Image (cartoon, rainbow, N blue to C red; front, side):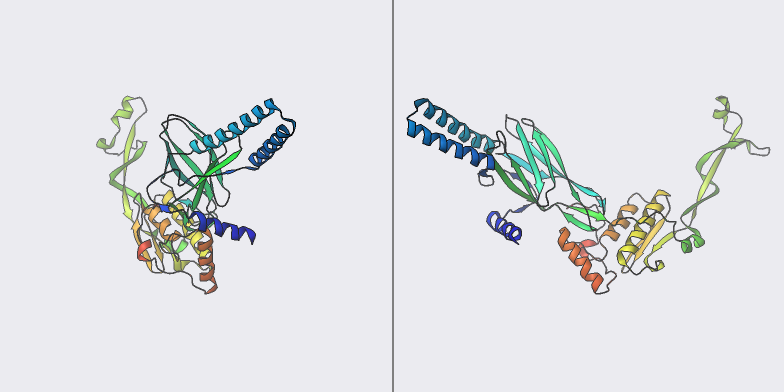
Length: 353
């Protein structure tokens, strides 16, 4: 309970604003407090000062104030290690549930001085530490576990440092509207639906004159124009060219074909079928309650189907992991297997805001 109250107080006190562009860290965004080592160092300086006063030690005064000046300079360097850094969010690729989404943030150091021991972390404790060369840009990746399908937000990020001596902790909050699309976790390997296979699954090849399909050995009676003269010139023997044509048959991945009552189980099986059909280069389509994607074997068909499965029953809204988990749980309690995508979720592009 104390941790929750502290988190709410920090959120109310600092109130980081969500940005879609570049954030520049200035004096209004950077906060500094002494660390435990810094408080201990201050306590030692206080004892030294009391001893100097009590025994009237001139050299003791020199040492005490020299160390105090060093501590003050340490605080200045901690601030300068973060001041005027420019941060912007990069592109985040879609992942499957159970994997980690790699959020990319681009840091640009405009100063002639390098920056050291910077740490980027989220509220859940995932972190990465890096250095920034002088007057250069660096892409920093932070891995956040994707436990549920749908949209995964990066949330509020904390950039902090204790450089150079660890006496002061300087930090700043940044929050971007970037998010990653999380596909359902595929089920275990299983064959494509048998009912569709009986009707003719996917793309079948038959003899024809459209596409070159390879070479075979010469058989008496083969037409002379089909002989591969170049192969014969390379002393590969007498061979004949083979051609094929695509026979138009389609595979439908249909929600109604699945006997399972659990929504997530059905989505996992459909995800596995989409991956299998794409690997086999089949012409396939997807049917969900309220959603129908026509059969295709184009380059983006896999992404369209996986996106529809990821947002099925969730919609296009950007949800943090706790909110998304509560939404899915409430739908299962009401016995709702799914709902059509909202207009905001009907776009079938990449999982990036």
